[in-house]
Structures are given as structure tokens and as C-alpha cells.
Length: 353
Image 1 (tube, rainbow, N blue to C red):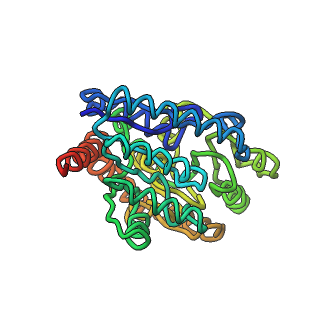
Image 2 (tube, rainbow, N blue to C red; image 1 turned 90 degrees about the vertical axis):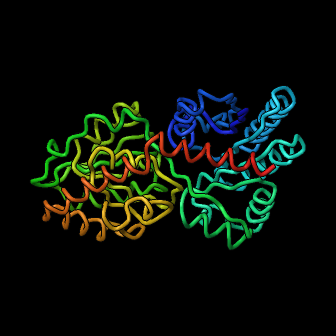
Image 3 (cartoon, rainbow, N blue to C red; image 1 turned 180 degrees about the horizontal axis):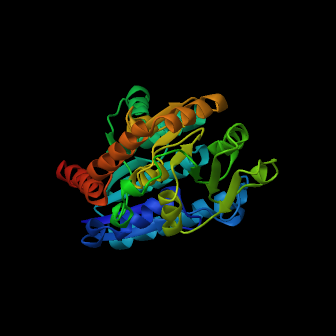
């Protein structure tokens, strides 16, 4: 197949960009003709959490459309896979891309890399999301909430295809090496912002001084300015290999994010045998169900403290969660399983003419 992927590459790392790298490294991508239009952010947003600048976004959109036009004309892809973050400006840009793609007669798949119900808010966003979906030949969602929103608001069915892990993450994980006597080390991985609930982690740590809370990821100024207790350690941004090391050395993964599509870090933590305590946003309830961890309401510090205390007292429950998480990752979130499902979707759309 001739495939054109419209998606960001690092920098910055994480999120959709990490998925893009893993996609390109997969066996399925390497055995097909895959080209990419890089939609990564530019300007001040690359290395810091800054507001969108209209000038930068205009230049970015212009460059994306220019490269897309060239790819469609010269390489004539059979199918175009467009990853959308579902932001308001992003939806407008993605709609312009979709219009160009449909004129070229390539098949178009829209992959919603977000919690659609949370992100698509306001009349403008709703209008352009609806237009984008209607132009597509297929829609992929990351979670059931997004799937339900697209069906209700746009009248279109979508296929849930989760994120996946590269094979090396699943190697050499031993439950026996975990500290099941008590919880001593809690870990968070992701952008260290209030939007990810990192201020909640700081408040949790104040109430549990006997537990160490480590946060790994790019740190924003709003968190740097907050007063932190001594049991908070902020590492900053590290390689994925180092992230996995931190996970394997921890006892529990805490993820109090306010919004999410499908967080890779949660399935990475599961693959490392960690029970999960997280907010019930995006795909998180679909991922951990009621067996891999505990769901807590957004911003509920006492709820997180209570959940940690429950798991701290119940060694057997922590072991069962760890075992279940490893089994689920191996069954549903490996690169082979997910990429086969995605390429089956491509073939189905192409066969429909």
C-alpha cells in the first residue's frame, strides 16, 4: 500500500509524536510504502509550554499544506492517515488538509488523538469536527467516549484502535522483583503541568510524607513556582529507556490528569507491573477497567490518598492488579496486535472502492 501519514514527529517528544515514531518503526510500516507529513509544533511551543502564537500557527499550517500538496501530486498515496489532536485551530487546519486530500481522490482516515467529547467544545470546533468527519472514509477513536460522541454528534461509526507498546518494553518484567510489602515509591510520567494534575500530586504528597513521589517529564513554570514537600522529586525530561527504568523501580503509578485521549504512559506502567491510580478520563477507564487500578475523580486529593492507603494495606490486591495489567497489555496493546488491526482497517477502506 502507498500510505501518507499526517502526524507530528519529535520534538517535542511524547504523545502523538511517540506514536508516530513507533508506527514508522513497525513491521507493517516497513513492508509498505509509507511517507509522512510532519505536523510538529514550531516556535516557542517546541521546548516550552507557551501559548499558541497566531503567526507561528499560520506559518505551520502553510508549510503543512504545501508539503501535503506536493506529496499528493508526486506520490499519489492510496490512503492518507490524518492524526488530529482536535484542538480548535487544529481542526480548521485538518479540515483544509482533508479538502485537499479528497480532491486528490486518495482515501482518508481521520484518527482522533484525543478525548473528543472534552476537546471539541464550542460552536466553531463542533462545526469543523463535523465537516472533517463527513469528508473522511473512516474514523478511528482512542476510547469509547470519543466513539459515542462521534456517533451522536456526527452520525458516524468509528473504530476504536488503542495505542501500543514496542516489544522491548515487555521484556524482562518480573513481578517477583516488585516491592509488595508496602508502597514506598509512587511515580508520575508526562508533561508536568496543572492540566495533567501535577499540583494534585504535590497536595497528595503533603498528606503522605512517608511515600516518595517522583515526577518525570518536561516541567512548566506554573509547577516550578509551587512550594513542594521534601518527598517530591522532579526529574525533568528523560529518554523513554530511562522512563521504563523509573517505572520498574516504582511501586505505584499515579496519573491525576484532567483530560486524555489514550495515555501511552499508563500502558507502559502496566507493562512494568504497576497498579494504577488515575482519573477516569479518556481511555483510562477502558484500559484499567476495575481490575488494574482505582479510578478517582479529577482534583480529589483525599480520594487519591484514600486509594493509595487501600492499596498500601492490601498486598494481595496490588499483586493481582500487577498480574492483570501485564496480561492485558500482552493481549491487547502490543505493536503486532494493534498495527495488524490498523492495517486491516486500511485494507477494508480500500476494498470498499
